[in-house]
Length: 546
Image (cartoon, rainbow, N blue to C red):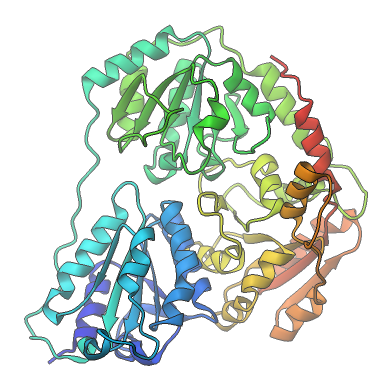
């Protein structure tokens, strides 16, 4: 007779799970043993947080839940940061942890924590398996819940004595099924079309829900048919190609950027798949004087600065198409002047040979090396703000930015997952020196599984983003400086390759060589973050060109 752990693995196979990221531990041994006979590939990592980040990025790129696993206690708490990151950024993720036997969960006991309640605030579904026969229902419910809009996290605690119990041979997984997005209400479509048609200066704010809803083509066609410019959140970069004349780029800085000028003059903001956690409405709608059209698969979040004129709920692509059918094109609405300023800024520093390199030059050269289908995984730090502003994307899910929970340490493990999902694309992790050291141990994981990734470190020997905030608010900084190892030697100590960029003209050939090496490569780039405060001053004095 099979064990409960074997039944769990059969249920995961039934859900189409390809990879499980994690670390074997004493209390999950029965699951690990069952995986030895499964087609699911177990990716043994060096830290559970990295396992969760890998599952996080897998979920973002595929739309299917990434799965990570740990043992009880400290193993489970190590999952929490990456798991919370996925949940807040609406990436489907399943975390499974071992747990002590049910015979000792009621009292003080070695490594025992109430894991279900620990994960509950950052989950859509958090549960313990207390009887073997309910495993098929729990697994099916977890996968169904975490994939439903808006996606998020599912946590399953599996006590070791339950995992070891035998189950009937007749026990089997449940049929995989889920609802399709509903069709939009014609009444709401009519109202939305009326509001948009009557607008003088409408603007579209596209969020990550467009990516999840596979509605990027529909968004671009909607903008073209109605002649309305599109700004995207950081996580929706590429939902309309940056080269498209109606693309205004990404919005998300606290400061007043060029793209924000389009919102200043707008009277109607069409929010499509907008996740409020990415860019709070009070930053683009401070006076609450604009009409908001909400187009999404789910109802709008409640917020004082996000009061709707009309909400269209249903399949995003269908909603956009039906609204466009009932609306007229805004022939006199031009994006030229504003877009020209944005495009000009992207090219201003492409020939700047100063060293350390300016962020603008680094990203200009990076864009020259990366193809339109290649994937950039950004860590969190000062570099993220530059990536979000200046790294142009032609397709969705080619620049992955954590922007809800915004947890440091995602880039290296995330790039491993991205390469597993897309083995034929170049995958580049851009990370600060601080974020790199949080999960740099996963270089060994990538080497062990022969997963070729390139990691570019923006090296400023400090917590650059925090220093930026300190200088902006207080005119001084403190406690943000540190020293780094020799990153080239550090990479080589794992058996990876390492390169150091010593002048601006070296970056493009070094990156090209790094990808040609077809292994794990670390590229150390000294960055000039004096540009941070220059940007703050520039945006503070910005006069909108429209």
